[in-house]
Length: 284
Length: 308
Image (cartoon, rainbow over all chains, first blue to last red):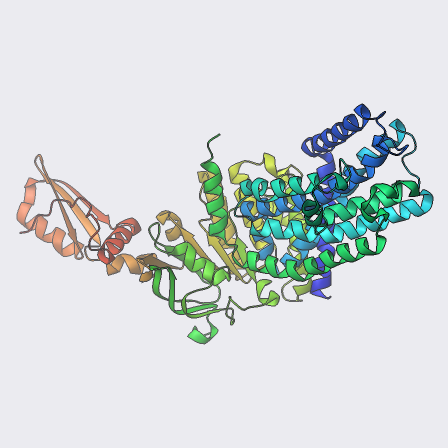
């Protein structure tokens, strides 16, 4: 029996179990519901707005972008929070005490957060198709594009979440170190309005990060070809999208194991105990 | 089997640990032999947890030689990990899981290391019953009481059927019944499985009940090593004689109880109205030892000594 492969199998099962537990948890159901209702309400109130210079309705333009932003946001913040919390509560330490436990743990995290993407996207996609017309212009090829953009986007952003969760000093700091930058990034990545309306240097910054490219890739899948005039350089830039997301995925794949190892090395019973004491001292 | 340093399960020489200029461990030497139950005692901040974390491979020592199951824990691989059990003090992890699901998941990692002599992991149902969680096997862990959670921690620590088990203050927060059950469990592990056990505790009665050997750690080093009885003998005045003459009461610590009492009868005769001989407890020994190694510590109130 190959112990590494065995551990990865256990990790996959762990991720699946966590996913099922999350689906059954009222807290997580509430989160999915809240995001979905919020997004749909936002699109509904803008349902009759036409985008300037096109016959495109706002929901048609914004839905793919919002899905992209939710992907990037959820897949970075989800693992960051989970990792920071499980470093503090001893989940990680439990795995560190097992043979090949860290491999199983990381596999579990990757599996769980990848799976969690489906309910968060589906709870928005399905009702959107019922509420709004003319959302998908790409047909079957469009759905295929959705599939590879989501897959690549996942590979590009998931490692960022793991790294963030490994380096934040505590769970409470995920907000400042993680949420804030990602929210700013989402705001400048052409999600809620076309990126051209921002200053040039801001456009440059946005194009370094995956969020913009995931949004662009999804727009290329959903929107009619005529909408390409709303994009930078009047092009979907599919090749560049693949290249940028792949680059992030490769950097993530190389960097994450090192950061995780370094973080795991520092875990011990006393770090868990210290986190517990710190949490008991919160002023509520 | 002879117990030499070579076949020791744990062998530590000159272990030092410092954080910046603060020295937590100043040169710890200790050996633990196969099948032994050894208890590490010491005041808060003596370095018990640091020592045990170095042995678990969770912390790198500043200096010294450490061998656990024949390997250096800092560099030992996964096969070594599979032979070692660690009971961790968790607090809110896996709240949505059930004890059964968690033990099945975590126990799975030991399956590749199962041997005909030592089947790994334990059967989950059996283990749940053993630690007294049989009825709670399918409850959410988040709804377990503190004591039940700690039993689950113990179950997680031994699920892989370890040859060596580390327990850092395992019974903190246990009620007397849970404590008794836990002691039975430790005895069973040690007697039936031959598991070598190293535990830390504050509870002297627990140490006396469980340990074959007690190590007292103070000020970053081992200040005493032996069975509870041996340790008690090492301290002068192992017994205390209390007597009364009329309304006056006296106390005298002595090693020679019989001689002292004989002289007492000779001198006092019928004036003696009460007599009590008390053997020093491990607690007395412990306090004496810790105090001896810390001369600047405030001394406890001395009993009135009578010499004649």
